[in-house]
Structure formats: C-alpha cells, structure tokens
Image (cartoon, rainbow, N blue to C red; front, side):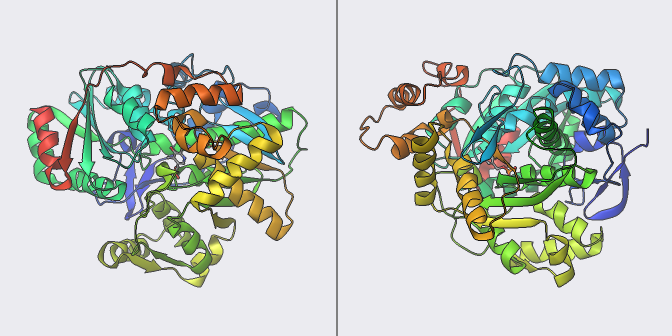
Length: 495
Ligand SMILES: *Cc1c(COP(=O)(O)O)cnc(C)c1O
C-alpha cells in the first residue's frame, strides 16, 4: 500500500509519519497536519456495504494511518468501538421528516466526539510505542463542552497518559459540566476558565507553542499532545461514519449504485464537516455539504461572502458546542483551496491573527462551491425541535436541530430533493432543559434530573447510562482560573 505522510498547512515541505503526526497534534509551525495525498478507496462500495462499522473503519483508516500494521490498527478499532456504545451498530440511521439522521451519539458521553475520542487514546499509545517514546503523554485540551468529557472518558486511567481539560465556566450545559467535574481517574484534571471557548482554545495553542514550557516538561518526562479536533487522529476516524452511512443506505436499497447524497452538518470547529468533505474527495458520492451554524455565524458569512471575520460579539446560544468564532479546521480547507500553497495560507492565517479577518480570492471561493451554508437562531432551533416532535415523535437535540432547520430552509429555497444525511451530533439528554422548553412549554421544574425523567416520558427513549451515572456522582474537580493563569495551572498539576 502507498505510504501516506503528513505535511503542515504552514510548511508543505514537512514530511512526517501518521503516528508522529498523531503524537504531535499540531505542527511546530502552528499549522495543521494534512495528508500528502487524499487516498482513494481500494475496496468497492459493494464490498463495504457488507461490513460492520469496525470493518468500514479499518478500510478507511488503513489508507491514512499507513505506518500502523493491520494488527495494530484492528486492535485500536476493536478497543474503541465496543460495548461502550449503546447500539450494536455503533451509529444508527433514523429516517424522520424527509432526511436520514445519522445518530453519532451512542458512545460513552452521548455526543459525536465519542466517535473519534474513543479511538484516539489507542492510536496515541500505539503511536508512542512505535516511536519508542518514554515520556508520559500529556493531553491538553480546550473544550466547548463535549470534547472535554469525551477525551476524559477516553484517557481515564490509560497508562502513560495524563489529561488536562479547560472549559469556559458558565459556557457549557449543566449536564456537560457535571459530566466533566465528576470525572474520576488520577491522571485527569478539569479546570474552568473565566473566558469563552475561543479564549481557552487560543491559550491552549499558545501553551503548545511555548518552547520554554516544552523544555521544562521534557526534563520532567512529559510531552504535550492534543486531543482537539485539529489532531489528525480525530479527523480521520470521523470520515468513517459518512462512508458507513452511505453504504448502509445502499445496502438497505434506499439509494442506488453511484447515487449522490447531500450531507448536512451542525458546525463549530469545522472538523465534522471537513471529514465529510474528505470522504467526498476519496470518492464517496456526496453532492452538497451543507454547513449549519447557530447565531455565531462566521462560517455562514464566510461561505456567502468569501470574507472570514471574527470581529463580532460572541453569543452564548442554546447550541453551546457550536459557539465558536475561530473554526480551527477551516485552515485545512483554506490550504487545499490555495492549491496547497503554504505561503498563501500563512498570509491568511497571519491576517486572522492580526486583524481578526481575511479575504479569499475568487478562485478559492469557487473551489468551495460544494459547500452551502445556513444558520438558525435560538428561536428557529427550538421551533424545529417542536415541529419534528409534533410531526414525527422524534426528538432532536439543539445542535442537530440547527442542522435540521438549515436543511429545511435549503430544500425550500432550492427545491433540491437529493437524499440527505443529517449528522445528529448529540443526544437530546445532553441538553434537556432547552429541548423540553421546545416540546413541553408548561414544564416548570428547575431540577436537571427531574427534567431528564420528563424527557424520557415524552420521548419514550430510556435515559442513557451516561446520564444515570452522574445523578449522584461526587464532584472531583472545582478549580476555576483566569486565562492568564492557565500555564501555572498546568505546571501545578504536573509538578
Ligand atoms: C463539537 C460539536 C459540534 C461541532 O462539531 P465541529 O466538528 O467542531 O464542527 C456540533 N454538535 C455537537 C453536539 C458537538 O459536540
């Protein structure tokens, strides 16, 4: 098989193996790793459609992680996609109101981040072994709510690793915060910051780039890695479920051979939808990629005008995992759109850093023609949950509802009735108060767990294990710091 290496979006000459790129997370020049080539499938969709999730996962990941042996990769896949998921299929595809909802929330923390974060620790520890790394790996992560818990769950008690998670205090849902601060495992550390997600993410990026810190940690036997969605070890596993859902539709006779589908993705950091785009580039018959934003609609503005501009007020919305003004993974699409020209990409990213905005050329904009963008307000989001519930009985979480609304609007506007998969990124139980606000207006309870029980009554869906577990769990982490104190907090935990 052809070996795929990784280069940086800020240094096209760099060449690194997949395992090294996974360990490092972010390139030293501040760029993101990209494969030297986007591989094509070497098995047919007819073969893929007979496989289960693990089988498809292997066929996709072997193309990208070409320095892992078959045995290593299959071991990682088997350790990740097991009984931690509450559906045997790992992901389910549910038809409701003219679209297929790809339920990506059946893992340990009931949001789609589990899809990649259940395998990342195994990829990382395998990569460390392959590269004779003796240092402990310290995962440093900023979260808008879902990454944090999914990473904590993935790395909890994994030998040779420690994990530190920063979340915006007051910027995540009750259930999200409770899930994180009750995390057990001596190798875990959870810290609230006085700032928003972008503040946390920028500060974490700075810690990664801090050479002094790196040297002093190295002397203590530690090295940083990232579990954020910029890690190639997260991006690639996310390609799998788009392939899986396509061949599932094929196997069930819902689409014919070669038929194109549209994909709609509720978007924040641009990782999930970028994975769908990579699947398309590999040859998966996808037509439009519909990028759905909430009121922090930088991406909507970007795709409609060609100007990325983060100079605006940050809004806390009822879809908090998408409350993001700097979508890190967009840099990968920008890089591809420049024709993989690192110096052009660097110019744009410097402009983003210095002025908060950049403009792309007409050529770059037409390169992105497959992307369509829309956004939903908080009211649109709740109305969409109510509509789907009253029409079909199916209950969406707020993030998925953003995508569902944007898809409906797209369809109305264009008349495009191409079969569509909507990425369903969280269980409604993760955002119960807002979901109930939409479907049970008279519910007056303020108690998070009473609301959970009420949602179960209304939806007929059993309360997931992930929520049952935290009802009475003990708080293990209560530290809150200023953004400027994050470095000290890291050193403190590792001393
Ligand atoms: C992280 C997240 C998103 C956004 O995904 P990106 O890959 O960051 O675009 C959407 N919905 C939920 C529930 C999430 O946790």
